[in-house]
Structure formats: C-alpha cells, structure tokens
Image (cartoon, rainbow, N blue to C red; front, side):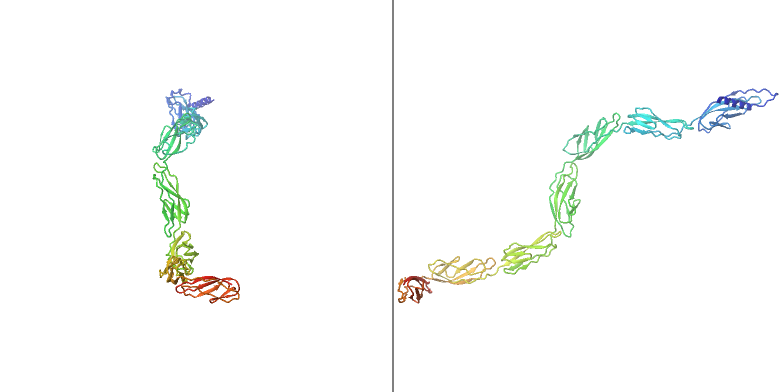
Length: 614
C-alpha cells in the first residue's frame, strides 16, 4: 500500500516536471543520474537540520524534494528538518529541460532516538544483615522505565527495583532505561559488593580483677551465630597484654579488650569489646582514730582532717554521716553544732594500688567551754549561820548546782551552805551544759575555823595514901577532844593518863587542858586542888547490950591518931537512936551503929561499926 502510494507520488512529480512539447520540438531523453551522496540517511533525533546533497545528473533541471512523513522529516529549502523518531521516504525530483526529461530518485531517511544523559549509577555495598534493598536509578533526561538485571543471582536477585541479597560476593547490576518518545534506550552498570552478615554476639562482659591475685586468665569469646575464628587485642599494653586467648595483667588501670571474629561463609567480620579493669591491691592503711573537737565561740569552727597513713598516693575523700553537725569540703571539716558523726575516708586508686576499703572514725563535736570569772575562797567560823553561794559569771546561761567535798564541814542544798564543822571543804560549782556550751566546773575552798570550847570546872579531889589511883572526872565541855592533866606536886600525886597515882600525903594543884579537836580550839586550862590524907590508926568499938526501958548507953570512942570528931548513925532508929555520944533505947532488937571520925588536915575520915543488942 505504502509502495503504491510512493509510485503514484513519483509519477505525479515526474509529470509535473515534464516540459510542455509541441510537435515541432526535438525529442527529450532521460538524464543520466548517479546517486552519489544521495543515499540512505540515518541521524539521531536532536539534530536541527541536515543539508541535502542531490544526486549527480547530466541534466541541469532543478531539483525539488518531498518527504512522505513530515512527522519524521520535513524539507526546508535544501535541508532536512529533523522532527521526530521514525523513517520516511524522501523523493528527489529533477525538473525536465529542453534536452532531458524529468527524473526522480528516492532515499530512506531514518531518525533514531537520542541517547539520554544519564547520571552515575552506584549500588552501595550491603551486608547480609539487610537482605532487601531498593535500587535507585541514575538520573536521566529520559522518562523511560528502568529495569534491572544481576550478573550473579547467587549473590543478588532482582524483582522490579528490589534487590534481594543471597550470598556474600560481588555482582554487576545493569540498569536499563527503555526508549521513550524521542529518547533511545540506555543502560548503566554498577558493581554491588555484598558483605557477610555481621555476626550476632552474646554478652562479652566486663572483667575486674586485682593485680597480683591473677597472673593470667583465659578469655571466653561471646556466643556467636558465626563459626569464624576469634582473635583478641588490648588497647593498653601497660595494663594487660594478650597472647592468643590468654590475658596477662601488667599494671593497674583499664584496657579495652577487643574480640574480633573472622569472616566466614555468609558472615562478615564481627567485633565485641569489653572493659578490663585491673585494680591495684588495696593499700595498707594506718589508724583513723576517733576525734573530739570542741566548738570555739566567735571563731571559725573548722578542722583539718588527717587521713590514715597509706602506702598509696591515691587522693582521699571524706564523707560525714550528718552534714548538719559536721560538713566536709576536701579535707576541711566545718563544725556547726554539738553532736557526733561518722566520718568515712576513702582513698582512690593510684599507681598499682586500687581504692582503699572505707575506714571510719567517730568525730565528736563537744560543746565550747564557758569562760568563768574567778570564784574566790570563803572563810567561815564554826557556828556561823547558813549562807548563800554566788556563782561566778559565765558566758553560758546553764544552771548552776553545787556540791561539798566534805559534808562533815559543810553541806549544800541548792545554793545554801550549812556549816557542819570546822575544817576545809572543796565546794564544786557545776554549770549545766546549755546550747553549744559544755558543762563546766569550778571550785573554791571553804575554810571553817574552830571556836574555843565551853568547859565546866575541874572538881576538887581527895585521896588517901595507900588507896588506888584516883580517876579524874574531866570537866564538862562541848568539845569531845581529849583532856590532858598535870600535877604541881609529884610528891603527892603523879598523873597517869586520866588518873592520879597517890604518892604521899599533902596537896597538889591539878591543871586540866582540853586539846584542840573537831570544831574547837584547845581549851583554856582549868585547875583544882587534890588533897591526899593519911589513914589514922583507930582502935575497935566494943559491941553493946542494953535492956528495954533501961538508961541510955554511953558511946566510948576508941583510940585514934586523928583528932577528928566522931559522929554516929543507927541502922534502925526504931530500936536505938543516937543522941550525940549516947544511944537511947526504943525497943528490943539489934542494930548496927556506924561511927565516923571526921577528916582533918592530916587524916582522912574513918568509919567503924559495932552492934547494939537490946
């Protein structure tokens, strides 16, 4: 159909090119035409125009051109205008001349699609951990649909734009863009490298150990879904070295131990790390003694803490159990109020020594000691009245109480002192703790002077030569101290303790003195006279008889060395009464008559008895 149409067009063109003839004209012939450069034309879309080179001909007839599909190529003057992708027939017609007939030649003109401008096509490396991957096509000036192929479906397979990773290795991914409108089909290649999946490792736990406790230990790798071989490395060879799977601690510190699992099969290289902490041995610490510090009024109440001695150079830290009593900054403790706290000291790691075990001490903040004025001694005399104590002035407002060291000298109730006896007593004044003031005490000496005792007289005494020693009756006294005695005449009496030993007849002055004792001074001496008599030799009285109703019986005194007068006493005046030196009979019976011869300056009184029967 198309060829028939072309033939019709050519015939029409030839007819139009034929000159009009008349019978008188010469006969024209067909020109001799050689195609030469007039041949099949192929050009890409996008070329604006191509110049037409007509066939060679021995005719000088004018050439004209016609495109059978102007959607592909149209004729502009003597040039092809490229309009779209496709093929068309271009007919060249040479007009007839006087000598030559019109002639035609046709050629095929093909316009191919233009290669689009395509950007870079890359496929990043992937791991089998992410088996699905969406391909991104390169940029292109064409809107043609992209499709993809893999050079190795054992590495990667493609469905649409989704890349499915199958195994480790490399494959070439070809991206092909279909022809579209006036754009030609094109393709780009990219190489994808599929890495083995990262193994899934279990825990690779941190390890802490003390230097010197373990000389070495064997590492156990984490569990893994890969069978790749393991190797190990230490980040700090001054802390630990690694040989195979054996770790040797070298010094205190930390090192990162990296466990690397080699790639194998569809698994890539995997790593896990753990921290190895090598602790130094605990240092040897000295004592951290308990401390008592008193508050200081109107001063900065700080105290520098001294840590225990240690063979480590690690830094010390201190913590107070109650910062409201004692707070700590660095090694400076600040004291706020009375109380006790526990201070915990910790020494940090240093060199090849690890941290110390915590040590504690009891830190006691004692109250401040009040400032007291002088409390003067007191002198009193036994017998003085009760008196009140006045406390010393004090910077504390605590209440006062008092005590006596010798209640035999003085007793204290509240602030009232009662004198009990002579002597000395220490009076202690105690001020109770108050706020941040400590309890405090002060003392004075109370001296109670004794008084002179009140004594009675020393009674006169008599004795007889030959009698036992005379017991001295001490004078009355409000003192209980011992009495001492002296004799003015040892030829009459000699003092022995509190008795007088009779030596001979006569008189002596006895002096009695009570020594100082208890609440009393020594007494003033008191005296008396002791008279020692001789005992006179006296004859016997004869017993007497009488008759009731008879006359009085005369008493005849016996012979005596004494001139003392005699007196008589009847034991029963109802039988016999005494009248001077005679006995008057009252009734029958028997009585005892006691005859007493009065003492004289020389002789002691004598007594004799005789019986009288009526």
